[in-house]
Length: 305
Image 1 (cartoon, rainbow, N blue to C red):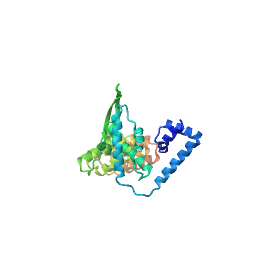
Image 2 (tube, one colour):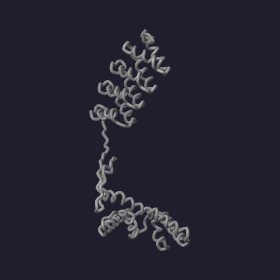
Image 3 (cartoon, helix red, strand yellow):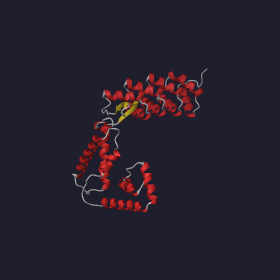
Image 4 (cartoon, rainbow, N blue to C red):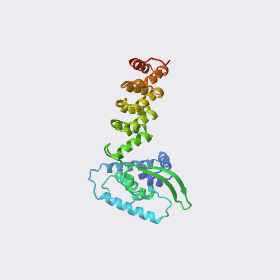
């Protein structure tokens, strides 16, 4: 690059609004050219002085800048083929406008870039409306098909998030919570859902959801939270059957400990066989001790004969 080209690029270089390749070329030139280094120093000093000005911002200035920017973009778009939008060129064109220096240059540049990003880019790329940007949106690109004219057709599956609020008495809320326990892939969401549901385990549908979770959920934290909700229903036959199954088959010692503690709250002869199996198979000393105490309290033998 020669000196004239570098000097022309210095304002955009100062704001980092050039390509990496151009930046390398400029810096390579600066290492060898003292005159251009002095020009860069003068530019930076000038910008620093502008940023130190204490004059209040004219409230009409930003409106004027945006209007000028819009006119320039429309004019440039109409004057060249639609082979892709050079947003950097538009920003550079913006620097040629007559703008009274009533605000720091840095602020003007940010206004220009922000306005382009917020108002122009969405309309160019797919026509995304402002309303579509307010709510989180999840997209999966299914196919991409370019054509000979330079256009690209992209098939996108989109899901928009919405918030549903209400009390547990609201059927929608209840159904969403139950669905989250059974189907949600995030264990944290399942735990949070069970934390809400467990206080209503007197409802058969809720109690069954907790039983399903303690029996089949792959996450031990979720199973423990479900056990917490089933504590006060240890006398229920379906709950006791599920707890007995957990005691024999769950691979997490903490879950098995919680299960036998819940069973202890309501002991009867229906779990004698389970407790005897535990004495034969369980390695955890605490669980074995609890099983032994329960069998002794029920005057049952420790082992099977």
